[in-house]
Image 1 (cartoon, rainbow, N blue to C red):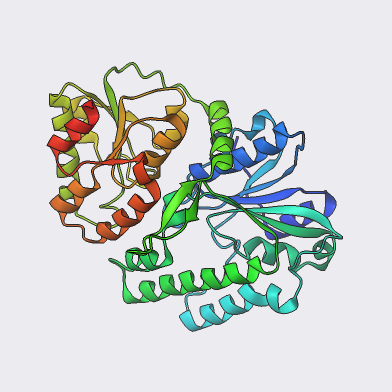
Image 2 (tube, one colour; image 1 turned 60 degrees about the horizontal axis):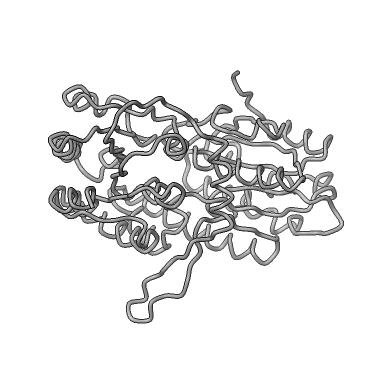
Length: 401
Protein backbone atom coordinates (compact mmCIF):
# COMPACT_ATOMS: atom_id res chain seq x y z
CA UNK A 1 0.00 0.00 0.00
CA UNK A 2 1.34 3.40 -1.02
CA UNK A 3 1.80 5.79 1.91
CA UNK A 4 0.14 9.19 1.72
CA UNK A 5 1.97 12.51 1.74
CA UNK A 6 0.91 14.68 4.67
CA UNK A 7 0.88 18.48 4.71
CA UNK A 8 1.56 20.69 7.71
CA UNK A 9 -2.10 21.73 7.94
CA UNK A 10 -3.19 18.08 7.94
CA UNK A 11 -0.69 17.20 10.66
CA UNK A 12 -1.98 20.01 12.84
CA UNK A 13 -5.59 18.92 12.30
CA UNK A 14 -4.72 15.40 13.49
CA UNK A 15 -2.94 16.79 16.54
CA UNK A 16 -5.87 19.07 17.32
CA UNK A 17 -8.68 16.53 16.84
CA UNK A 18 -7.03 13.53 18.52
CA UNK A 19 -4.86 12.87 21.53
CA UNK A 20 -1.54 12.02 19.95
CA UNK A 21 1.14 10.47 22.17
CA UNK A 22 4.11 10.91 19.84
CA UNK A 23 5.32 12.29 16.54
CA UNK A 24 8.45 10.68 15.06
CA UNK A 25 10.63 11.63 12.09
CA UNK A 26 12.71 8.91 10.45
CA UNK A 27 14.77 8.50 7.29
CA UNK A 28 16.66 5.18 7.37
CA UNK A 29 16.21 1.50 8.21
CA UNK A 30 18.22 1.98 11.39
CA UNK A 31 15.86 4.76 12.49
CA UNK A 32 12.93 2.39 11.87
CA UNK A 33 14.53 -0.22 14.13
CA UNK A 34 15.13 2.40 16.84
CA UNK A 35 11.53 3.57 16.70
CA UNK A 36 10.24 -0.02 16.76
CA UNK A 37 12.33 -0.65 19.89
CA UNK A 38 10.93 2.42 21.64
CA UNK A 39 7.33 1.48 20.83
CA UNK A 40 7.83 -2.15 21.82
CA UNK A 41 9.24 -1.12 25.21
CA UNK A 42 6.03 0.81 25.87
CA UNK A 43 3.92 -2.12 24.68
CA UNK A 44 5.54 -4.72 26.97
CA UNK A 45 5.11 -2.29 29.87
CA UNK A 46 1.35 -2.09 29.15
CA UNK A 47 1.65 1.48 27.97
CA UNK A 48 0.47 1.31 24.38
CA UNK A 49 0.94 4.71 22.77
CA UNK A 50 -0.48 6.00 19.48
CA UNK A 51 1.18 8.49 17.24
CA UNK A 52 2.26 9.77 13.85
CA UNK A 53 5.38 8.69 11.99
CA UNK A 54 6.81 11.04 9.34
CA UNK A 55 9.20 9.55 6.78
CA UNK A 56 11.60 12.14 5.40
CA UNK A 57 13.48 11.73 2.13
CA UNK A 58 17.23 11.27 2.28
CA UNK A 59 19.02 14.35 0.95
CA UNK A 60 20.76 12.34 -1.80
CA UNK A 61 18.62 9.25 -2.36
CA UNK A 62 15.02 10.28 -1.73
CA UNK A 63 12.76 7.93 0.22
CA UNK A 64 14.68 4.82 1.25
CA UNK A 65 12.13 3.23 3.63
CA UNK A 66 8.39 2.62 3.69
CA UNK A 67 5.81 0.86 5.83
CA UNK A 68 7.30 -2.62 5.31
CA UNK A 69 10.48 -1.51 7.10
CA UNK A 70 8.71 -1.27 10.47
CA UNK A 71 7.65 -4.09 12.78
CA UNK A 72 5.39 -2.11 15.12
CA UNK A 73 2.24 -3.15 13.22
CA UNK A 74 2.36 -6.31 15.34
CA UNK A 75 1.59 -4.31 18.48
CA UNK A 76 0.78 -0.69 17.55
CA UNK A 77 -1.71 1.11 15.28
CA UNK A 78 0.13 4.37 14.66
CA UNK A 79 -0.09 6.07 11.27
CA UNK A 80 2.79 6.56 8.82
CA UNK A 81 3.08 9.34 6.25
CA UNK A 82 5.64 10.72 3.85
CA UNK A 83 6.67 14.37 4.11
CA UNK A 84 8.37 16.24 1.29
CA UNK A 85 11.89 17.64 1.43
CA UNK A 86 10.64 21.17 2.13
CA UNK A 87 8.31 20.23 5.00
CA UNK A 88 10.65 21.56 7.69
CA UNK A 89 12.60 24.00 5.52
CA UNK A 90 10.32 25.77 3.01
CA UNK A 91 13.04 28.41 2.54
CA UNK A 92 15.11 25.86 0.57
CA UNK A 93 12.90 26.49 -2.46
CA UNK A 94 14.50 29.91 -2.74
CA UNK A 95 17.88 29.84 -4.49
CA UNK A 96 19.02 33.28 -3.34
CA UNK A 97 21.55 32.55 -0.60
CA UNK A 98 21.03 35.86 1.24
CA UNK A 99 17.22 35.59 1.25
CA UNK A 100 17.48 31.91 2.12
CA UNK A 101 19.72 32.64 5.13
CA UNK A 102 17.43 35.40 6.44
CA UNK A 103 14.31 33.27 6.09
CA UNK A 104 16.09 30.33 7.66
CA UNK A 105 17.11 32.27 10.75
CA UNK A 106 13.64 33.74 11.22
CA UNK A 107 11.73 30.49 10.72
CA UNK A 108 14.22 28.39 12.67
CA UNK A 109 14.29 30.46 15.83
CA UNK A 110 10.85 32.04 15.75
CA UNK A 111 9.47 29.54 18.31
CA UNK A 112 12.26 30.49 20.72
CA UNK A 113 11.63 34.18 20.21
CA UNK A 114 7.91 33.71 20.76
CA UNK A 115 8.55 31.54 23.86
CA UNK A 116 5.91 28.99 22.92
CA UNK A 117 8.04 25.88 22.84
CA UNK A 118 8.88 25.11 26.43
CA UNK A 119 7.79 22.33 28.68
CA UNK A 120 4.62 22.82 30.76
CA UNK A 121 3.49 19.96 32.99
CA UNK A 122 -0.15 21.13 32.87
CA UNK A 123 -0.56 19.90 29.29
CA UNK A 124 -0.63 16.44 27.66
CA UNK A 125 2.81 14.98 27.19
CA UNK A 126 3.81 14.36 23.61
CA UNK A 127 6.99 12.51 22.64
CA UNK A 128 8.87 14.14 19.77
CA UNK A 129 11.17 11.44 18.41
CA UNK A 130 14.25 12.21 16.31
CA UNK A 131 17.42 10.39 15.32
CA UNK A 132 20.89 11.58 16.29
CA UNK A 133 20.34 14.92 18.08
CA UNK A 134 17.45 17.11 19.27
CA UNK A 135 16.16 19.65 16.77
CA UNK A 136 13.57 22.34 16.80
CA UNK A 137 11.83 21.05 13.65
CA UNK A 138 8.68 19.51 15.14
CA UNK A 139 8.46 22.05 17.92
CA UNK A 140 8.44 24.74 15.27
CA UNK A 141 5.62 23.02 13.37
CA UNK A 142 3.47 22.12 16.37
CA UNK A 143 3.95 24.82 18.97
CA UNK A 144 3.62 27.86 16.74
CA UNK A 145 -0.08 27.02 16.66
CA UNK A 146 -1.66 28.41 19.81
CA UNK A 147 -4.37 25.75 19.93
CA UNK A 148 -1.65 23.07 20.08
CA UNK A 149 0.75 24.91 22.37
CA UNK A 150 -2.05 24.90 24.98
CA UNK A 151 -2.73 21.19 24.49
CA UNK A 152 0.68 19.51 24.40
CA UNK A 153 3.90 19.62 26.36
CA UNK A 154 6.99 18.28 24.51
CA UNK A 155 9.28 15.50 25.67
CA UNK A 156 12.11 14.68 23.28
CA UNK A 157 13.29 11.15 22.56
CA UNK A 158 16.54 10.91 20.61
CA UNK A 159 17.22 7.55 18.95
CA UNK A 160 20.51 6.14 17.74
CA UNK A 161 21.76 7.27 14.30
CA UNK A 162 24.44 4.61 14.00
CA UNK A 163 28.13 5.41 13.95
CA UNK A 164 27.40 9.07 13.19
CA UNK A 165 25.85 9.47 16.65
CA UNK A 166 29.25 9.25 18.28
CA UNK A 167 31.52 11.09 15.84
CA UNK A 168 32.98 14.20 17.47
CA UNK A 169 32.17 17.65 16.09
CA UNK A 170 35.86 18.12 15.30
CA UNK A 171 36.00 14.95 13.19
CA UNK A 172 32.68 15.80 11.51
CA UNK A 173 34.05 19.14 10.36
CA UNK A 174 37.08 17.44 8.83
CA UNK A 175 35.21 14.58 7.16
CA UNK A 176 32.25 16.64 5.95
CA UNK A 177 34.58 19.34 4.67
CA UNK A 178 36.48 17.02 2.35
CA UNK A 179 35.87 16.87 -1.42
CA UNK A 180 33.15 19.54 -1.51
CA UNK A 181 32.94 23.10 -2.75
CA UNK A 182 33.84 26.05 -0.53
CA UNK A 183 30.18 27.13 -0.51
CA UNK A 184 29.01 23.70 0.66
CA UNK A 185 31.83 23.55 3.19
CA UNK A 186 30.65 26.83 4.75
CA UNK A 187 27.06 25.58 4.77
CA UNK A 188 28.01 22.29 6.45
CA UNK A 189 30.13 24.00 9.09
CA UNK A 190 27.24 26.38 9.76
CA UNK A 191 24.87 23.43 10.09
CA UNK A 192 27.15 21.79 12.67
CA UNK A 193 27.43 25.03 14.66
CA UNK A 194 23.68 25.65 14.58
CA UNK A 195 22.98 22.07 15.66
CA UNK A 196 25.30 22.50 18.64
CA UNK A 197 23.64 25.78 19.60
CA UNK A 198 20.22 24.21 19.16
CA UNK A 199 21.06 21.32 21.48
CA UNK A 200 22.05 23.76 24.21
CA UNK A 201 18.81 25.75 23.87
CA UNK A 202 16.62 22.66 23.93
CA UNK A 203 18.45 20.88 26.75
CA UNK A 204 17.73 23.84 29.03
CA UNK A 205 14.02 24.00 28.23
CA UNK A 206 12.68 20.58 27.20
CA UNK A 207 13.00 17.15 28.86
CA UNK A 208 15.25 15.02 26.64
CA UNK A 209 15.83 11.26 26.81
CA UNK A 210 18.56 9.72 24.66
CA UNK A 211 18.27 6.11 23.53
CA UNK A 212 21.84 5.57 22.35
CA UNK A 213 23.62 2.22 22.29
CA UNK A 214 26.75 3.75 23.78
CA UNK A 215 27.57 6.49 26.23
CA UNK A 216 30.79 8.41 26.64
CA UNK A 217 33.10 7.40 29.43
CA UNK A 218 36.03 9.44 30.71
CA UNK A 219 38.69 10.58 28.29
CA UNK A 220 42.13 9.09 28.40
CA UNK A 221 44.19 11.69 30.26
CA UNK A 222 47.30 10.93 28.21
CA UNK A 223 45.96 11.39 24.69
CA UNK A 224 42.50 12.87 25.34
CA UNK A 225 40.83 10.22 23.17
CA UNK A 226 37.21 9.55 23.97
CA UNK A 227 36.07 6.13 25.08
CA UNK A 228 32.59 4.64 25.06
CA UNK A 229 30.79 2.05 27.11
CA UNK A 230 27.75 -0.04 26.18
CA UNK A 231 24.36 1.25 27.33
CA UNK A 232 22.96 -2.16 28.27
CA UNK A 233 19.33 -1.09 28.81
CA UNK A 234 19.06 0.26 25.27
CA UNK A 235 21.04 -2.63 23.75
CA UNK A 236 18.61 -5.08 25.38
CA UNK A 237 15.70 -3.01 24.05
CA UNK A 238 17.08 -3.37 20.51
CA UNK A 239 17.71 -7.09 21.01
CA UNK A 240 14.05 -7.63 21.91
CA UNK A 241 12.76 -5.92 18.78
CA UNK A 242 15.34 -7.58 16.51
CA UNK A 243 13.93 -10.97 17.51
CA UNK A 244 10.51 -9.79 16.30
CA UNK A 245 11.93 -8.24 13.12
CA UNK A 246 13.79 -11.46 12.22
CA UNK A 247 13.79 -12.14 8.47
CA UNK A 248 14.72 -15.41 6.77
CA UNK A 249 16.40 -15.03 3.37
CA UNK A 250 16.78 -18.82 3.07
CA UNK A 251 20.52 -18.54 2.53
CA UNK A 252 21.90 -22.00 1.81
CA UNK A 253 25.60 -21.18 1.65
CA UNK A 254 27.96 -22.77 4.17
CA UNK A 255 31.33 -21.54 5.43
CA UNK A 256 29.95 -18.10 4.66
CA UNK A 257 31.35 -14.60 5.17
CA UNK A 258 29.20 -11.49 4.79
CA UNK A 259 30.93 -8.45 3.37
CA UNK A 260 29.45 -5.00 4.09
CA UNK A 261 30.40 -2.58 1.31
CA UNK A 262 30.49 1.22 1.57
CA UNK A 263 29.74 4.08 -0.88
CA UNK A 264 33.31 5.39 -1.08
CA UNK A 265 33.28 6.18 -4.80
CA UNK A 266 29.76 7.60 -4.56
CA UNK A 267 31.06 10.01 -1.90
CA UNK A 268 34.12 10.83 -4.07
CA UNK A 269 36.53 9.43 -1.49
CA UNK A 270 38.20 7.27 -4.10
CA UNK A 271 37.76 6.33 -7.74
CA UNK A 272 35.29 3.62 -8.70
CA UNK A 273 38.16 1.77 -10.42
CA UNK A 274 40.22 1.65 -7.20
CA UNK A 275 37.23 0.67 -5.13
CA UNK A 276 36.27 -2.23 -7.40
CA UNK A 277 39.89 -3.39 -7.56
CA UNK A 278 40.04 -3.58 -3.76
CA UNK A 279 36.73 -5.43 -3.47
CA UNK A 280 37.62 -7.89 -6.24
CA UNK A 281 40.99 -8.62 -4.62
CA UNK A 282 39.23 -9.36 -1.34
CA UNK A 283 36.57 -11.56 -2.93
CA UNK A 284 39.14 -13.47 -4.97
CA UNK A 285 41.28 -14.08 -1.87
CA UNK A 286 38.35 -15.37 0.16
CA UNK A 287 37.00 -17.58 -2.64
CA UNK A 288 40.48 -19.07 -3.17
CA UNK A 289 40.44 -19.94 0.53
CA UNK A 290 37.16 -21.82 0.09
CA UNK A 291 34.82 -19.30 1.70
CA UNK A 292 31.38 -18.47 0.34
CA UNK A 293 30.80 -14.71 0.07
CA UNK A 294 27.56 -12.82 0.51
CA UNK A 295 27.70 -9.16 -0.43
CA UNK A 296 25.53 -6.60 1.37
CA UNK A 297 25.45 -3.29 -0.47
CA UNK A 298 25.14 -0.03 1.44
CA UNK A 299 21.75 1.63 0.74
CA UNK A 300 23.50 4.56 -0.93
CA UNK A 301 25.52 2.53 -3.41
CA UNK A 302 24.11 2.21 -6.92
CA UNK A 303 22.43 -1.11 -7.62
CA UNK A 304 24.63 -2.60 -10.36
CA UNK A 305 27.96 -1.53 -8.93
CA UNK A 306 29.35 -5.02 -8.25
CA UNK A 307 27.49 -7.02 -10.92
CA UNK A 308 30.67 -8.02 -12.79
CA UNK A 309 32.33 -9.28 -9.58
CA UNK A 310 29.17 -11.08 -8.47
CA UNK A 311 28.90 -12.90 -11.79
CA UNK A 312 32.62 -13.68 -12.09
CA UNK A 313 32.94 -15.23 -8.63
CA UNK A 314 29.38 -16.55 -8.32
CA UNK A 315 28.71 -14.80 -5.03
CA UNK A 316 25.34 -13.97 -3.49
CA UNK A 317 23.98 -10.49 -2.88
CA UNK A 318 21.60 -9.33 -0.17
CA UNK A 319 18.98 -6.81 -1.32
CA UNK A 320 19.87 -3.24 -0.39
CA UNK A 321 16.55 -2.65 1.35
CA UNK A 322 17.20 -5.39 3.93
CA UNK A 323 18.67 -4.07 7.19
CA UNK A 324 21.65 -6.28 7.92
CA UNK A 325 20.58 -6.56 11.58
CA UNK A 326 17.32 -8.25 10.52
CA UNK A 327 19.31 -10.80 8.53
CA UNK A 328 21.69 -11.68 11.38
CA UNK A 329 18.66 -12.65 13.48
CA UNK A 330 18.03 -15.59 11.16
CA UNK A 331 21.45 -16.39 9.68
CA UNK A 332 24.86 -16.83 11.32
CA UNK A 333 27.90 -16.34 9.06
CA UNK A 334 31.35 -17.36 10.30
CA UNK A 335 32.28 -13.68 10.35
CA UNK A 336 31.40 -10.24 9.00
CA UNK A 337 33.93 -8.12 7.10
CA UNK A 338 33.65 -4.42 6.32
CA UNK A 339 35.45 -1.13 6.82
CA UNK A 340 33.76 1.44 9.07
CA UNK A 341 30.19 0.19 8.96
CA UNK A 342 27.76 0.43 11.87
CA UNK A 343 26.85 -3.13 10.87
CA UNK A 344 30.26 -4.39 12.02
CA UNK A 345 29.65 -3.09 15.53
CA UNK A 346 26.05 -4.31 15.59
CA UNK A 347 27.01 -7.80 14.38
CA UNK A 348 29.13 -8.28 17.49
CA UNK A 349 27.05 -6.23 19.91
CA UNK A 350 23.69 -7.90 19.19
CA UNK A 351 24.62 -11.30 17.76
CA UNK A 352 28.12 -12.05 19.12
CA UNK A 353 29.49 -12.48 15.58
CA UNK A 354 33.16 -12.00 14.71
CA UNK A 355 33.56 -8.58 13.04
CA UNK A 356 36.67 -7.66 11.04
CA UNK A 357 37.50 -4.27 9.55
CA UNK A 358 39.81 -3.93 6.53
CA UNK A 359 39.90 -0.13 6.74
CA UNK A 360 43.70 -0.17 7.11
CA UNK A 361 43.98 -2.10 3.84
CA UNK A 362 41.71 0.44 2.11
CA UNK A 363 43.72 3.40 3.43
CA UNK A 364 47.00 1.80 2.40
CA UNK A 365 45.90 0.82 -1.12
CA UNK A 366 43.69 3.72 -2.17
CA UNK A 367 45.50 6.43 -0.17
CA UNK A 368 42.22 7.77 1.26
CA UNK A 369 43.76 9.98 3.93
CA UNK A 370 40.42 11.29 5.18
CA UNK A 371 39.54 7.74 6.27
CA UNK A 372 42.26 7.92 8.91
CA UNK A 373 40.20 10.47 10.85
CA UNK A 374 37.05 8.34 10.57
CA UNK A 375 39.00 5.18 11.45
CA UNK A 376 40.34 6.71 14.68
CA UNK A 377 36.80 7.70 15.70
CA UNK A 378 35.48 4.25 14.77
CA UNK A 379 38.10 2.50 16.90
CA UNK A 380 37.23 4.61 19.94
CA UNK A 381 33.59 3.61 19.59
CA UNK A 382 33.97 -0.04 18.61
CA UNK A 383 36.56 -0.90 21.25
CA UNK A 384 37.28 -4.64 21.18
CA UNK A 385 34.05 -5.51 19.34
CA UNK A 386 35.81 -5.15 15.97
CA UNK A 387 39.11 -6.72 14.89
CA UNK A 388 41.41 -5.10 12.30
CA UNK A 389 43.36 -6.61 9.42
CA UNK A 390 46.13 -4.61 7.75
CA UNK A 391 46.78 -7.28 5.06
CA UNK A 392 45.44 -10.61 3.76
CA UNK A 393 47.75 -12.65 5.99
CA UNK A 394 46.30 -11.00 9.09
CA UNK A 395 42.78 -11.30 7.69
CA UNK A 396 42.94 -15.07 7.19
CA UNK A 397 44.47 -15.45 10.65
CA UNK A 398 41.60 -13.50 12.24
CA UNK A 399 38.97 -15.47 10.33
CA UNK A 400 40.36 -18.87 11.32
CA UNK A 401 41.34 -18.19 14.93
